[in-house]
Length: 117
Image (cartoon, rainbow, N blue to C red):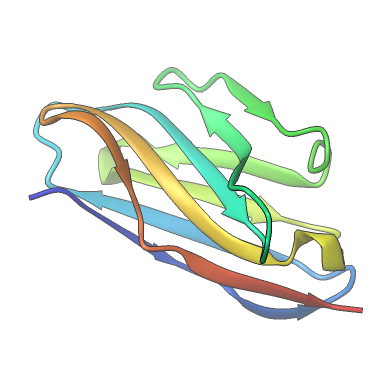
């Protein structure tokens, strides 16, 4: 059974930093793309950052230069380093992993990030 376990969310002040982690359990053949999404109250879920299996990254314009996505393939883990946080970054953050086996996209349960002004 595939399970994604996120951690690292919390309350931080404007300009502060947080580091999110997401560990993937149950993958038997490695992981293709991994990504972080977020959903603020009353808004649609949006892509924050994505990283391919060979390390190519892309970011939403709103976080470019402030957030960094990385991964540890040996530990089936993806990270999101968030710096210079703003109140607009307040949301539930979800990780997503595209697995080879079992094939498909899988989501974590979400971790809450709140940035106070």
